[in-house]
Length: 236
Image 1 (cartoon, one colour):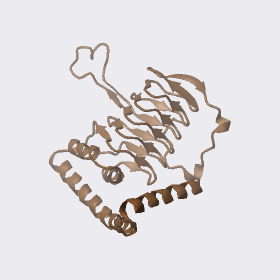
Image 2 (tube, one colour):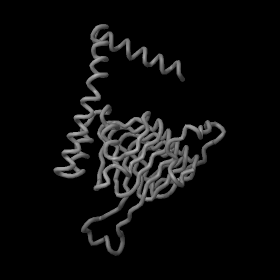
Image 3 (spheres, rainbow, N blue to C red):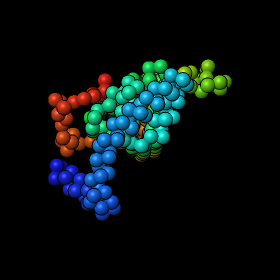
Image 4 (spheres, rainbow, N blue to C red):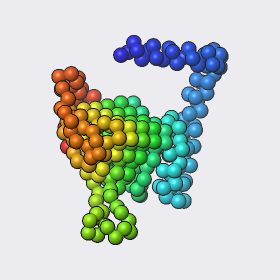
C-alpha cells in the first residue's frame, strides 16, 4: 500500500512539473504552504461574521461553495469532529443547522465523503472510521411535512440520529432516514432508501433497502482497536 501511495505521489509530481515546469512546480508548492493557512483563517473569520450577522444558514451556503481544501477547517471551526485524514468532497449541503453549529457532525478516520452530500442536522449524524459515502447521498435526521393536512394523523414529525458504522459503504444517490443505524462493514447499494437499521456485515439494496445477503467476515480484515477514532454507538 505504501509503495502504491509513493507511486501516486510521484505521478502527481511528474504531471505538475510537466504542466508548470520544475521552477513553477516548486514555486506553487511554496505558495500553497505559506498562503493556505492565511486564506483558511480569513475564511473562518468571514464565516463567523456571517454567523453573527445572519445566522448559520449563511455559513452553510458559504460551506457549499468552498473547494475541498477549506471544508474540514471550516466545519471544525463550528464544532464538527473530523479526523485529520478524513476526506470531505465539494458541494456539501448542510440543512437544519441551529445555534449548536456543526457539533452534531462526527466523521471518523479515513472516512470518505463524495461530492454533493446532504446532511440534515436535526439530530446527531455520525460516520465511523473508514466509512465511504457516495456522491449525491442524503441523510435526513427528521421528517416534517410542514403545513400539509397529512401531518397530524398520518405523518407526524419524527426526529432521530443517524449512525453509520465503521467501514460502511453507502452507494451513490442513496437516502438514509432518521433513526437509522447501519452496522459496521455493511454495503448499501446505489439508489437505495434506508428506512430501518441494517445489521453489521450485510449487503442491502432497494427502496426501501432490504438485506440481500450476509458478507463473509473472514475476507474482511479486522479493525485495529488502538487506532479507533469514532465508533458510532449501536453500530457494532
